[in-house]
Length: 343
Image (cartoon, rainbow, N blue to C red; front, side):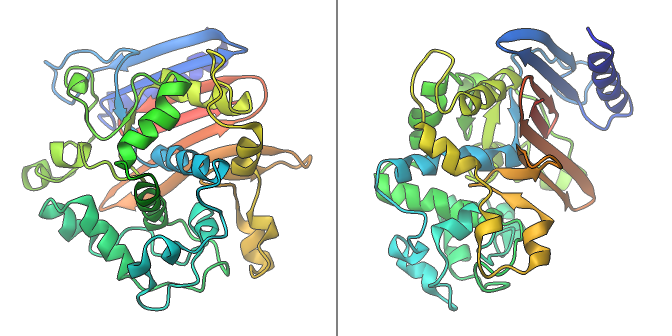
């Protein structure tokens, strides 16, 4: 183990020691060679809990977003939708309150003007509302700004992309994601929503008030099986690495299967923000986005592909980060936090 790898592990162990997380897992590969495959601590916050392993499944939250956008991009590849189609072309009820000019491109790039979380998110969860009610709430929402004029992170726009995929394919989005992305990529431990086989290998999230939120929080069966396209995937460090490897290989899985065409991968990972004509210079320079993948612009003119979010949920903060670069892949999952990095 290199000094850098030891530093990562020590920092994760320090966070576990102060009860900030129940477990973590990390996997580092370079050109297909596994340099580190590590997991630490327990599946939940009780001392009697079974240990976490490298096969442990984490509820990866916002890393679901680039998985959703990569899946929906397959429909563009197949000619079934276009990035410049309007959301109302597929979901007519979305037009309420002047949203008829929102394009799929805006939802892909966080420039739709939609709010981040669905209006009424917590009350909906408290009564275990189905995904269809979240879609209806988004269709009834008002825009925060005109589409294409600003960049603001929006989970509700990713939700609409999943809804469009369901209406175009006639399949539940979780099934379409499995057959389009997970299965051909070899991500055998990944699923949008819950699977019974996760029962003995899943990692618990830390909740502030479990006595009052246990029927709807991140550890509840309701939320684990909810399957929100913006935050509902369960996965492992190894599977996230497989996703990164596939994108680096221009859509080819490690088994040699074509998951996405090279042109589709280029489209997903292109910095679309710099080309939007109605953005201010400040907004254009603030951050870059591909189709659901954050673009980190390097000083030498290069790009690193990233998926990350940083936000607050009541009093708890989390961050997950998924990066693809040049010569090394590393995937680090913390309980309810996920990183995947290629450097």
